[in-house]
Length: 227
Image 1 (cartoon, rainbow, N blue to C red):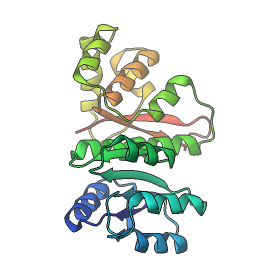
Image 2 (image 1 turned 90 degrees about the horizontal axis):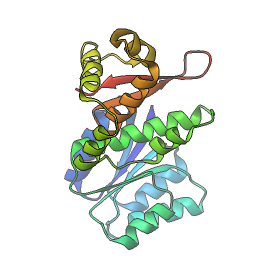
Image 3 (image 1 turned 30 degrees about the vertical axis):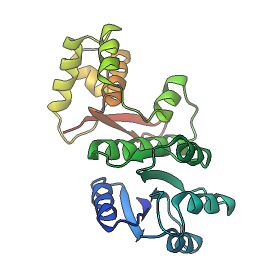
Image 4 (image 1 turned 135 degrees about the vertical axis):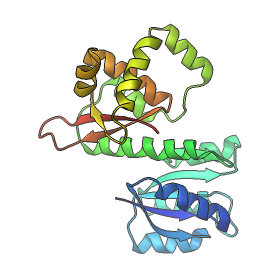
């Protein structure tokens, strides 16, 4: 479980962030704070994996909190959730090593995508295995493609008929993660094709993936179509 701390001065927004985060079974909310100083005091005494952090707070801003954590050597992962959309604040947050940046108001799908990307990145890095450039590109990308980019991708070789065949296969196994080999066996497509199309579906936020470390060798990637 990913021990997660929420720091948000707006009580209603803090509650929404908590509800959204708890929809992910891998996330455990261990504390919620409404100001930066109390959060800093807690994080000096307790360990956590992820911080959902607001920027605008009275007395002690989110960036001041994050800056102090970094000075003290605390490498907690941080997703900024704020109304601040100016270049100065965004640049400072990136410099301090945030993993994602959500601008209020945001949709649940974007929030869920931030957590999914973070969890995938964390699991992949903890595996200690080398990455291909394509895998690195997936890990560092946080922006879902626009409608125009989807159209371009289809024009580059993603065939609608093949895409629907894979979607049908995944729909036939709802709430069940499948390996690339299982999808290939059921659809009659090659594993290379399955990987390419699954990458496309993940980029379009239609599917999720996780890494299975129980294989004994190189971890296997499992796929599921989002409901």
